[in-house]
Image (cartoon, rainbow, N blue to C red):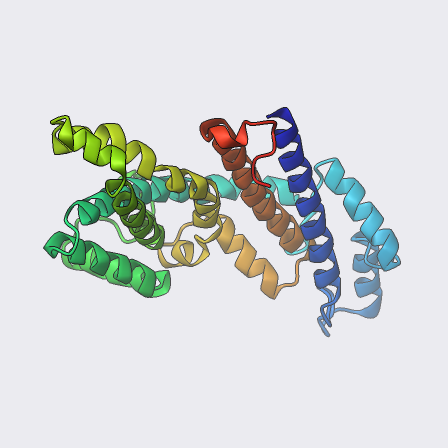
Length: 309
């Protein structure tokens, strides 16, 4: 098992290095730089390039960039002078994180519930209703679903605020908007795996022993059908956090997504690279955690540490 963990850890570090390098190369491959504004005087432009190290050869910039990354230094923002990228991420990411974990809870609870109900009522009304909700969740993007939910539940019914403030209830609509696609994914996967489990011989044996439907679902079906859900929770959580950019814009959430969009238009190299690497590290870490958790859960992965090969 230790060998399995070490292998996954090395793969994660190698992946992060590749992403960091590609991010650096792509940023410097852009035709312009942050200081191409014609309003800037040539001497001012050159002074700024020297300040941010853009006057050095590309190879030297890369070495400095990687050394700083190893020290946890993501650089200083160009658009927000005097503010480090790390400080901006530390300030804004909790707001994105607050939406992400709430969206994950909504997606997991209601997605699993819909999937189980659909499987237990296969080819009946509840099954078709579950499939319909899943189709809606996958088909309608957040940029359309968000305003619809805000107008209906916020403006017309007045149940929830349409912008995020300090109240807990104001996070419900953006969290629900963010959760819908993942909820649909989980419900479809849960329906499929539950139907597979219901067709197994040990379920027939449980029925023959006289166990009620509730006992069979809780003791046998749920425990086995949930395994594929566990494998996607890490990447799903990371996707919810990194995919909240549109939702943050719709509901006026001053999260990390807002900085990411604004700095791209300004070609703020340190900010773009810093946030990209942060998001990549988050996704890689979530996948690593799920891999390790699954290694403990699935006995096949514990055998001589060769799981996943």
